Amino acid sequence: MLSSFQLGLIVLGVVVVVAVMAYNRWQTARLQPRRARAVVSTATEPSLDVTGDGQEDERQEPSLGDDLGIERPANAPAPSTASSALLNPQLDAIVPLTPESVVSGDALLAALPGTRRIGSKPFFIEAMSPEGQAWEFPRAGQRYDALKAGIQLANRTGALNEIEFSEFVVKLQAFCDGLHLSADFPDMMVEVGRARELDQFAADHDAQLTFTLRATRAAWSPGYLTQHAAMQGFVAGALPGRMVLPASQAGAAPILVLQYETQAALSDDPDQAALRQFSISLDVPHVARSERPFVRLREAAIQLSKAMEGLITDDGGQPLNTDAMDRIGADLEVLYDALEQRGLDAGMPLTRRLFS
Image (cartoon, rainbow, N blue to C red; front, side, top):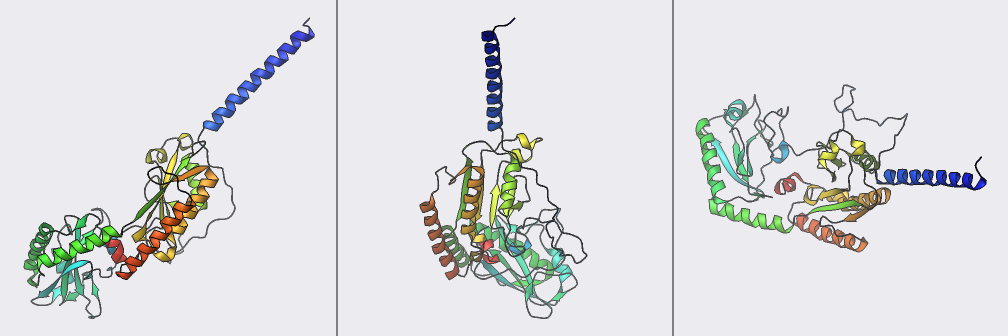
């Protein structure tokens, strides 16, 4: 027979073992990445039928396309309709082209070079519409008697230089020779000087903001992060580990871009992948001022930091408090004013081309 003392020791031992097991289990759970909660809903999000055939279109991240002079991948389909003209004397060195006789859109398209870039600068060929009302990219089945070409003076890779301008002249002259066009080239040094001045302005007025959220306690799983980001309006982006806050206007650049580790996004077991940080970025010249992009960035960062127990820092790891955010916001207002005074309002296609 066990004495009362021995029974007490056994009970105490069992209690200690259970307590240790419970503590270890709690510690393990605490250190596990936080997972997304299952959400059951009988409602479905309304979809936008833009095709007119009653089928739902998948929400996709807006992208920079032909309207900004950015080349499509080789295997990408061409647009089904002509895009609006791009050439602008503020941003391009423009060359009037005079044909000996009316030239067909089919001939123009066939003669275009395989790549429409000189170094890092896109160049364009445009034609006056048959109705004589607007410039457009050449279209098959049309006939034109007025043409022009141009090369972009500057972008984020720098200003157009003498070598690039000379290569543009050579490539355009070959295009003209094949179609019996005469080209009235501007003075190279004048255009290069304009390019350098524009590039300096762009360098002085460019801004790309990044807020980083760092976990202060348990790490996050990708599902946990995306679930909370979706509550702030973010949708899946074009690449793994990327979400975007769409603009109010279809086809415009996303207001904000949220990014986290690609490897975690592609993990075989996303619930076990651990994220200790992610970033939210704003490309200021690409987003219209009317979208209140910095306010949206600030609000999203604060809401996510509270909900996920994270710390907001700059991209260098320094914590960002209210005063620091206020100063950033004030600086951005000055930048917006300067862009608008130059005729380069944030979010405009012309501005997006310059800051690309």
